[in-house]
Image (tube, rainbow, N blue to C red; front, side, top):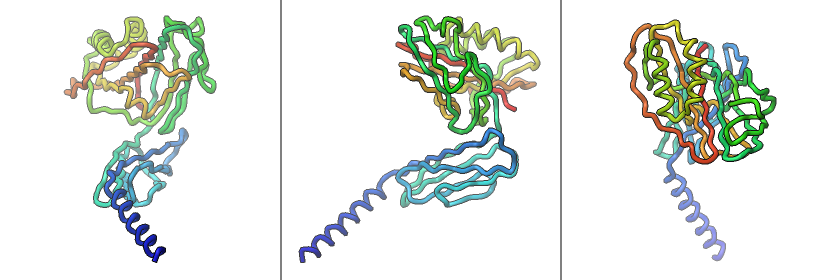
Length: 284
């Protein structure tokens, strides 16, 4: 009889546990990586990191689907593809949508570092969706390990860390501004001030980019803020800054003044030990 009671209790406990698991809201999550030297057709493995889920439905954006947990899918044509993962827990579901696109270059990102006192610091970049560093100053090697003064000077010689990189082009192009060539200088001055760049950082941007933006009558400009950039290019520090501020611009030449939805500008926080970074993205 004693064992019968134990069996009944265990059975009831399992029912309660299952009921609690089924009450949890699922969270869809996945990642993938595109090889740097890919050629079509390409097999892309998808890693499923969903939580509280017991079944899945993948839509690979090319008319095919899968119910595997961690599928590998072959693409035969050129990107982009919109991939959707729906994660289920009973009658509850959650969907995550991501875009697999072609490669783009992030050109001349400048990383400005402002510690409160002179520090030794190591800075590392990584590419969670695939990609690679193309060039850097000073030499990146396996990371930058540098000495930074409180005024921002690096190794007594540099005002910023410079790099260029190649990674999948999955940047947002829904919100932005369309600016005439003649107004680019004033636009970037005002826009970068609004975000929180200082005059020296803005001068560096203007001096490099304005002479290069001279071939088209208008330019569509799509800002990429920190959360978006971190999905594609992660940056880490051996000593954690109080604030890391990142802003890239996707800049595309256009022949007409397109109407775009202006995004909300969220100013940088520049308290304590902080980082400012700007860059420009151009599509292959």
